[in-house]
Length: 295
Figure 1: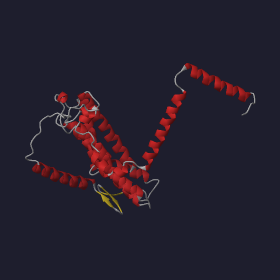
Figure 2: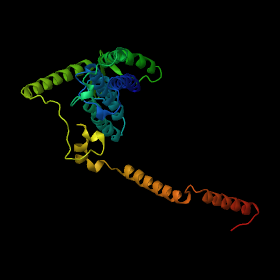
Figure 3: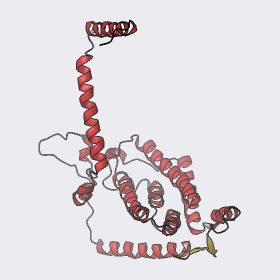
Figure 4: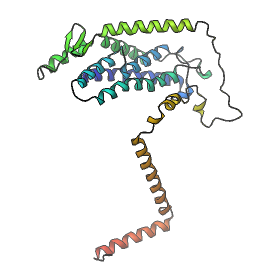
């Protein structure tokens, strides 16, 4: 399980950093609210980011799901069930907050200043595509790496390795066949994609338009972006979960520290005479203490 996560983390984090770096280089900015609609101009970067967030969130069919599947089996072998629930919800939540990267940068309307943007430079794009190929290959044939580790672990833990049946990993809770999962997810994706194309076959293409405010200037420039307040529907549905006890605790502690800082600024005003008085008072206290005078 650890090896699955290590390999995945190395590949998809490298791929995402390269993709975002290529976008920043071509657009000349790192502010997402200045971007949008880059999917048509930087399609390969979009594919790399999409595959990266699928892998990092651990949803099928990539190898991130394989690591989670092994994790599920390890938890089921214990009496703990809370980690199982946390792990189950962690995947969709990770995909949701990472989807904002695609939603803000690649989807929506293209900015006027980016209409001549080209795909990322070749030497930034090449390793991304290599990482995409490695990620898919590792998802289809995980045994290339895992079998080697399995053989090594078996020397120390004879009963702690994985059970293989061809390309499948088998446990008493079920089995994980990466090729079958890839085919099933691929068929589901194609069916849904074809259905969306059919439903939207008469959709009218919307031209570029400006977001106008009623004679008011936006207080922040990012509020003019179509992806502004992306998580509002989720906060509305799950608002009771957005302020857990830990958040309220740290907010209260922060308020107390700010109040203490305000009190300190009343004492330390920057006035030289005040600092001189503080120094003399401190020196006097030390002198009296050294002479044995106690209050």
